Image (cartoon, rainbow, N blue to C red; front, top):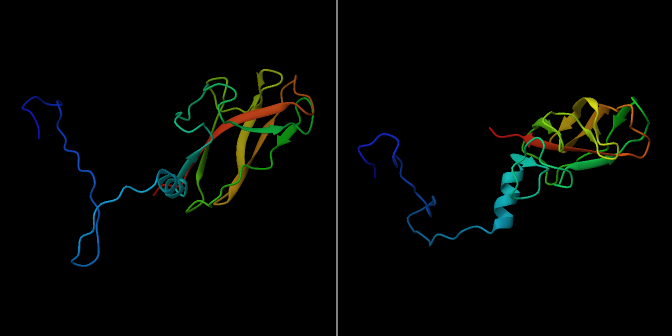
Amino acid sequence: FSSSAAGANDYIDITNVKLEVGNTATPFEHPALAETILHCQRRYRASANQGAAPVQNLGAGTGEFQFVAPLGTTSTQRSGGPFFYPPMRATPTITLLNPSAANAQVRDETAAADCASSAAGNVSDHGFNITCTGNAGTAAGNLLGVHWIADARI
């Protein structure tokens, strides 16, 4: 169980346990990975590639949500998503993460510069949209990208 030294393996792991109704026990079976991911996505999901921690400055091309700038320069840019399938269990809290810098701004990946005033809007259990102010180098058609975390845990 534990040693006499504080902080040295002062824990116990309990695995392969399940609760059942009734008096008959059945063998433990690990659920399929796809089933486990599906259940988790009702409470938490992120745009980063599976196996990567969703953090600022993760890098371009790492699963960030991308959309095309509909307008040029410092105009307000609006995305059409992302959307959640299956829906989350409740309206999540959204956190935005810049894929190429240590901040929460949408990145103009074409102009290699950050946008400003980035925010998630119209948030529901089915998805949200993203707004931001383009930078001086943003042109209509530029590729904009941002990582996000949606958290609806209890």
